[in-house]
Length: 82
Image (tube, rainbow, N blue to C red; front, side):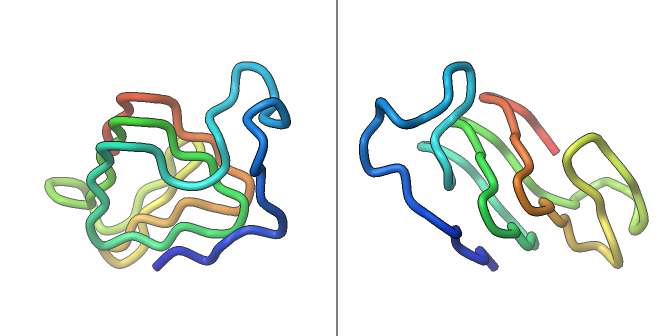
């Protein structure tokens, strides 16, 4: 589930320096996840609860009942595996 965004960055010049664009980048794999509003997920990110505990608190994400949750305004860097 992807919750959307409060606004869109249609011009690449409006993306803050050092951050990925808002939304989900290219070549990402997302399985059993909820992505809240305004999340920035860079290219090549893998998000899956496979092989992880049912309850876990990580930096910029958490797992509840086997579902990965990316909270509002979270930034997930390129190539990150959850």
